[in-house]
Length: 153
Image (cartoon, rainbow, N blue to C red; front, side, top):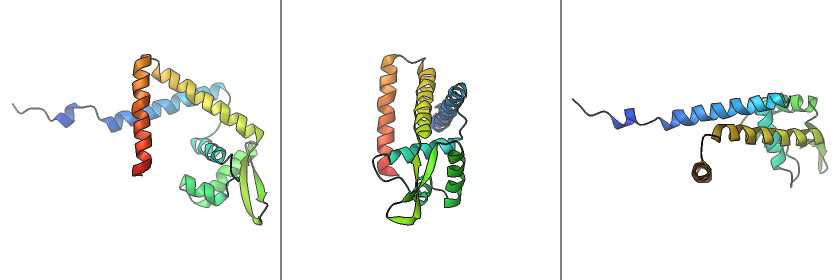
């Protein structure tokens, strides 16, 4: 009888990561619904990116398109939706009136804080079966992967 293929008996880490990511997303969505926050994943990502510029000049639409890796028209649609929710606003660039920059509003900042809270609550739910030591180990492993990904991507 041939020995089993080790690859067939080991857990598929890629599939486990995808399943965990989906589970995290669903848990975060549940917490967002409890807070009555209705944003798409793309809208939440755009809010996070705009916030990333908080200590700099607000980003231009082209900056957002580059960071999101989408065409500028897709950013316009996202900004329109977030502007309708009073989460962002378009502001003229003081150095070039033809350039429009996007900044968070007070509503956008409070929404982002709530989103971060929903994400932390979702993580607590998912990580609840782990001991404190296991969570520390997982955090270290994730840091290694995240920090290492920046050098390889």
